[in-house]
Amino acid sequence: MRLTVLYCLMWSFWTSAGHFPRACTSSKNLVEKECCPPWNGDGSPCGQLSGRGSCQDVLLSNAPLGPQFPFTGVDERESWPSVFYNRTCQCSGNFMGFNCGNCKFGFRGSNCTERRLLVRKNIFDLSVSEKDKFLAYLTLAKHTTSPDYVIPVGTYGQMNNGTTPMFSDINIYDLFVWMHYYVSRDTLLGGSEVWRDIDFAHEAPGFLPWHRLFLLLWEQEIQKLTGDENFTIPYWDWRDAESCDVCTDEYMGGRHPENPNLLSPASFFSSWQIICSRLEEYNSRQSLCNATSEGPLLRNPGNHDKARTPRLPSSSDVEFCLSLTQYESGSMDKAANFSFRNTLEGFANPLTGIADATQSSMHNALHMYMNGTMSQVQGSANDPIFLLHHAFVDSIFEQWLRRHRPLQEVYPAANAPIGHNRESYMVPFIPLYRNGDFFISSRDLGYDYSYLQDSDPDFFQGYIKPLLEQASRIWPWLVGAAVIGAVLTAALATLIGLLCRHKRKQLPEEKQPLLMEKEDYHSLLYQSHL
Image (tube, rainbow, N blue to C red; front, side, top):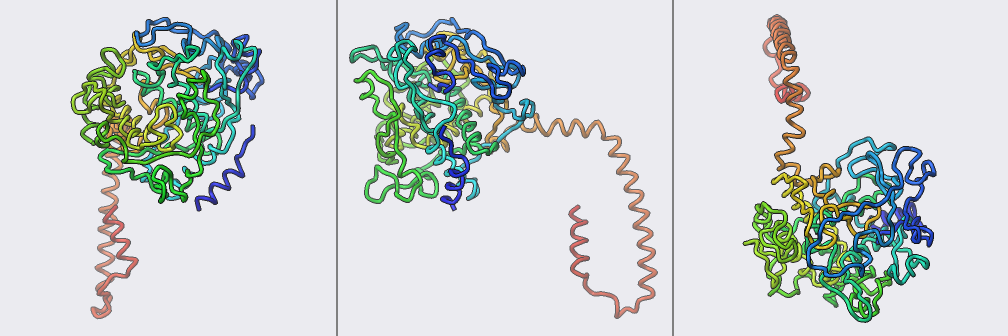
């Protein structure tokens, strides 16, 4: 069944065709620093003729940064995306995309006016066909070249400031692996020197908004690839787990019978090749990962450093995280105390909220527990469990937002580590998105989590209460209709009673039915339920 779905999808949707739009990688684009491709709908840059957007200067935030990165002008990710582009499409209304050809998250339709709310489900609640489809989509993405995006295989300096473009094709799945590598890689300082204390997506306030956008864009790419506009990433609820219960051949791949570091040959993922996992090699060469295959996916869950990660997170750990009222605190990095972000990310003790460099808990604990490709930050997205894991982390972020209802101003505007201020554009995404844009409820971005819908008090306020208010406005009419209905029912019942008594008098006693017919019983039962 799984193979049938996979082959059908690959036959139907195969294409040959930072997160750099293919249309913006010519030497002309790079030298002029402009990325304003035409929208196919009208052929104008950014769909301007149709009112979708226009080509505008990129306005960068000048808010001060934290002290963690003491350099200026040495990393192409600084003041993103100004090293590559200083003019991009600015989309209007509900339009979005590098050429304003897509809809904002939560909208669809030719004019992006239809709201929609998709629901991410627990992977164990998926039907067999839904689960098989998800696995087939993963494999399809791994074997389909991205029609819209390419990756740079050299730094901007190595491209001679744009005059010699160096870009390469990449498949859709590995595009996101590469983005996760690129955002967290070390700064190359020349010679053999690097600066390691830098990360544009981890160890600081942007950790949760960045990964939220990452998952949304991944879903969007799969929806475009397959034509399944209702696709969502499932989550793995790992609270109180005693083992990796998704690590079976039915789901994300079991253990190899002969080599515990490899996946079972019966798994979809045993033949996958990983990329961007050799950080020290890239650093020594002062080069970027070029997405060359680097061997099989590695995973050995449970055989990790138990002194650093003694157990997987518990329900009480999650509840403690949610009780923390501060999103960010202090230095706003991995040394922050009583920070919801830092505790959920796993750099602070989930029992006290105090930063602890000797332990890896919460989000970090799952990465360590997998004891393989997923345990190294830059290459961790190679393992598809990464998606299930981060979907659940995002659901905890969503719970915190609903419980504490923070204003957007709660997200730090200044003095966060580089790339993490509220108005900073997130690396390496084009089109551009700010950190603060995703410090909002998931419902405003068009998705929810199945386990949050049932327990969320906002569901009553947002959905049930309006219905009750509508009912209250027509309540007098309902009462009147009920009274009239009762009178008619009483009159009809009296008439039927008189007819029945008249009929019984005519019927000999031995011919009266002792039992109801089956249809009569069901009819009475239905009426009583009604």
